[in-house]
Structures are given as C-alpha cells and as structure tokens.
Image 1 (cartoon, rainbow, N blue to C red):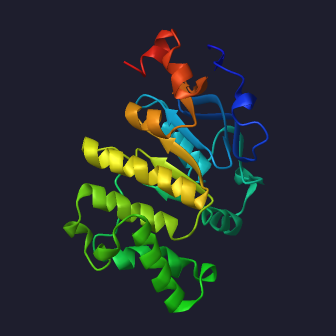
Image 2: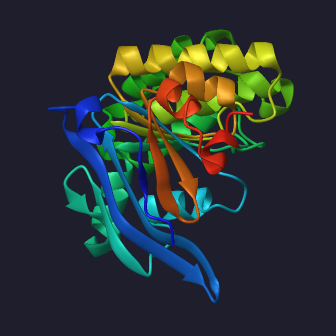
Length: 259
C-alpha cells in the first residue's frame, strides 16, 4: 500500500492551534472490502478542513465513525479531548450536542414547519436552553443568520433547494455547536445558490468561530472555503495541504481531483 504523501509540513499550517478532532489509524472493512486502511486526520480549532474523495472512497464511513454511528475495526477517534469509541450512550449523546451536522439532503421533517424543525433539537435537549421564550429567540436568531427569518412558518415543501439547505444549517446552528460537519453542502444546487451557501458557511465560521469539516466533490467550494485539504484515496490520507499546493502536485491520483 502506498505510503501517505506528505505535501507540506502539516504542523506549519496550524501551529499552536488546539486540536478538536484527532483520528489515528482508522480502519474499517466490510468483508473483503477494506474501506479505511489506517486513515489519519486532525481538525484544529477555528479551521475549515475539506476532505475530498471519489464515490466509495470511505468518506461516509469515516463520518459515521466520527459521530459514533459506526464502530471502526481499529484506530482511535478523539473529539474535543474525549475518546469517542470509549464513551457510553449518555456521554456520546452529550458530546453530539457540541457537534452540528448538515446532511446532504437537508433532512428536514416534511410534516413540520420551519419553526418546528428548528425547535425539535431544543425539545430534545431542554437542558441547553431556558424555556419557551429563549427557544423562540433562538429560532428567530438562527433564521436571521441564514437570511430566512421570513420563512419561519413555511413548510419544507414551500422552500427551494437552497432555502432548505439554509434552514438545515439554521437547525444546526441553534444548538451553538463548536464543530460543524458538512456533508456535500453544495450538492444539487445551481452555481449561484452554491456560491451563496459557501459565503454563508464562511460567515458562520467568522461569527461563531466554529471548526468545520467539509466533505465535498465541489472543487470551487474547496478552493474558496478550505484552510486545508485532505485527499482520501485508497482508504488513507493520501495527500494533504492547501488548495493551491495540492493543485500543483503532479501525482496522477492527486491531479484527478483538479481536472
């Protein structure tokens, strides 16, 4: 198996910055299909880290291991100083309140209004807010931050694809997460709406000081939003660096991402 390609000194990119996610030697197989073969990555506080990989490369498996929906065969997953694999269900649920997740398909509840969709995580975690008035304030504030305060009483069926993505992002923000995981945030959107979502993600990082892990096939999204990139190939962190650095690499497996 090919050794991981070091494009630059990784430590020089984020020197002296706190590590909020640390994955080491993550391995996961399904029978003879070895999806992750010793994958390594770190996410630093306040950083936008983009992970790119072809379909079937293991991105979804890695994310599921990262949020505790799937157990790896071996390796470690450390999130904000906690060993995810060793946490019991209660501790894992508590940790998840600090980790927001934006699903590729938005995953709004069709039978609920926008307001009810945003209130849902607050009802599940009542200890995170103080009563109905504070919940209402959080709903409106979250929608204002994505430019959709006027849509509070609409149903998902009344929203465009871009609006659904914004509402889903507002629902993520309402719990004030320290880390946000984005799964293909611009997938299925037209170029103008994709640009708006990217700009919104940058605004959120600046306003909330979040650390973000972005899974994307969108090269333009990666170019604009990434502080650092990882290319997931053959189940490992095959190449790592800034967009500019990786775009100059001559390795065919790296070049394939920039054609």
